[in-house]
Length: 113
Image 1 (cartoon, rainbow, N blue to C red):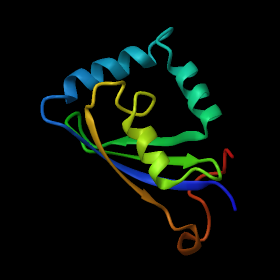
Image 2: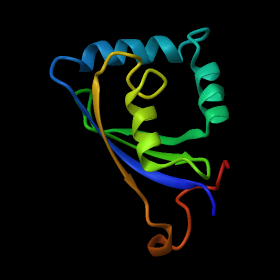
Image 3: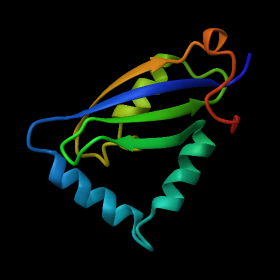
C-alpha cells in the first residue's frame, strides 16, 4: 500500500472569502508561520501539492497527498479542522475525492510519502 492522493473542491461559505484571503496572505508573509504549518502537516501525514484558485470568490481546487494508513474520513476531518485550509475560520466547504491511481496510471505528483 502507498500514499493516497485527493482532489479537493473548495467553495467559500457566504461572506467568508475576504477574511480568508486576508488570513492566508498574513500566514504566507515572512514570519507568518506558513513554513511551520506545512512542516507540521507533513509530519502529520498531509501534504498539499497545489492550490488552484479560480477567482477571489472561489472556487479553488487542491491536490493533497496523505500518508499510507490515513482514511478518507480522517483526511476530511483534517481538511475541515484547525490545521486544514480554514485557518479556524470555517470559511471553506471542502469536498474531498480520492484520485483512483489505478485509472490514472501514475500519481499526479511525485510522492512525498
